[in-house]
Length: 353
Length: 250
Image (cartoon, rainbow over all chains, first blue to last red; front, side, top):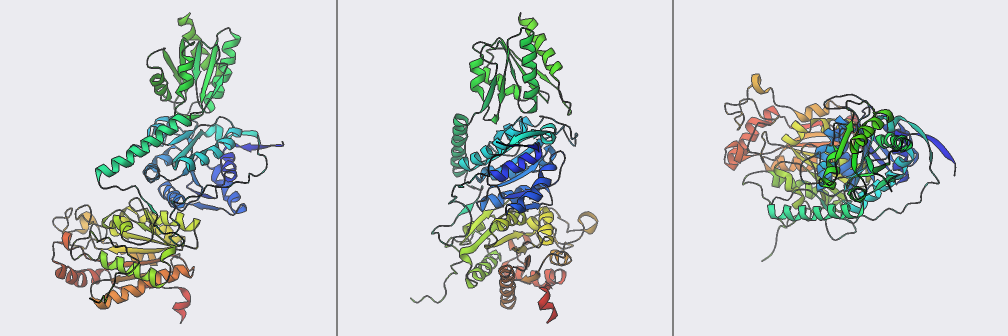
């Protein structure tokens, strides 16, 4: 199959188009700008709609409307813009609408900067908006994986009638890599009998809503949502293992950092340290299965993130104190390096030995 | 016993929850009748606001979406872009549309989104307990302007119809009142016109409807009707502020 060279941000757009998404609503923000640039040209080619909203707040509510109308729809933004979207994301989760949100995370808090970061892990995995809800969260680590996971994101959103977030950072968004696109898939999209498309041809009215004024009624809805999240947790955990079989020192990292951690594992192995890597592909549900399995052989874990330590809490939860869990991170948009991660791992290993 | 009047099929059988003397019920009926008369009830998708009309999805006998506070025009934009042949309307109050939702309404109007907006102005936040709205009159007492609205603290009442008529995008902007049989008939014509504009694909249409809130105004229903006519209409004059271009010429 022929490969083409593609930029990460464009791949989010092309992956969406190939997943049958024909509606994009967004508001400009760095470092995701190449994504709307790409779709502003691409959507008209495939008979889709590209619309630049007046704000992130408006964009996510346009997504809410388009999803209610039964379309495969997406938006994209970066950390501060995603913060602005949280009310709408909570409504989308509450009204059980399928939608895909791309989040090219940047340094924070506040205006922070536009450099690569993973400091919104808590926001995307633990909620962000108000209410007891969960997003499905996917974290690609290459341009090819962006294309592949965008298809998964739309499928999962429809399957669970739940918003799915796909996270990256400025490095992943702006790097170019060869990708295999293959022929344009011939999709049969799922029917959405619940969509508000007008009652013509139907005996019942469809209502898209997240308001349940009676507490007992809302609790029933919440219990149903929790059952759905449990099903996600059971069926949708995804991860990649690298040199994990005999690993005594297990690294965990997602997205771009996982590529750095993978190189660090090779360096550590070359130095005689039996290191391995677990790369979560779904951040929610968190893939605790390989973590608990690896704990049978591992002496210690090292979580590497571009933040002050967020996913590390989920690793500690998975292990319940069975093994020591260490953390190494850089913040403020500083990219960590193979040398730094290798150094941090060696220090831990020396103490173990 | 013979039935001489029936409720329009554009409304469900559910009794309104609105307070005695509130004119939301009349406005609901005008919107529902317009959809039925134009034969588009089955094509309609309505967006309800946050505010007293938050339960409008229980009343309009068509597909309905409940939107976040102020965001109905953005939600309507999403629906209409996906389903351009459906009839999409929002039903919003003055807190929803003229306070938190100003950005969404101005830009939906500016884009000329082919949607119909019913904007209910009763000069007060109703649902949350009678607080000042952007449309509260100068001197009007509310729970958050206990000494009357003063320019020095709270600025001026916002005239939404005039403001949106200054934007290039809209096709039709009108202000009506539901304070008398004559005004109600005029309001009906404007609401119907606003849907016809959408069906003709002419673009954004908004009808501002001056409405009563006896509960939060502290008036009886008949007093509230008089207050609307005597106090509100001088500040919010009735009329068509923008009509499609070909109509202007003839």
